[in-house]
Image 1: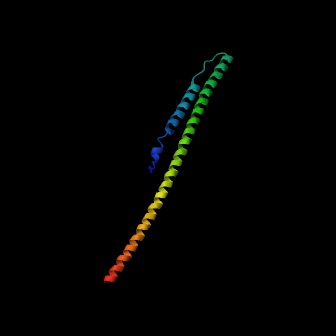
Image 2: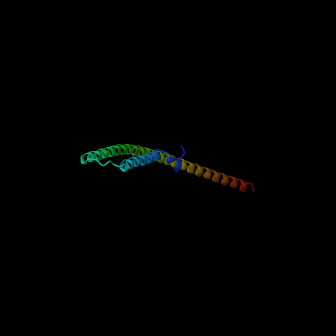
Image 3: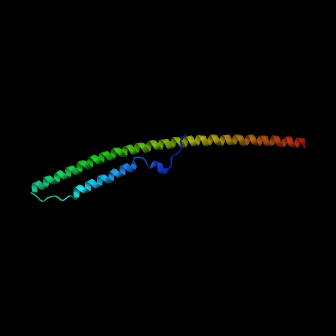
Length: 125
């Protein structure tokens, strides 16, 4: 039977990596929005704005799809870990029941030996 890992070991999975990528995504998108746009003709400004929106949204959509895939991976990991923990709990339950049964048998045997020893003493004395 394997040992159950502590809480701190479980946190070393892919979760910190996902958090870092979310932060990086936000920084990149905000940096694009903060850049000053040059004042030019109306249509050129609209084209620049459309280009910026497409670039930001395209990057965002790709990043969101990547995050969704990573979250699905994390979900699968957590489901597998949950199943593993359930198996270990079941193994522990069986082992605990076997230990209880063995202890009960030993206690009953000792009680019988004690009675036999007391009977022998009373017969001698």
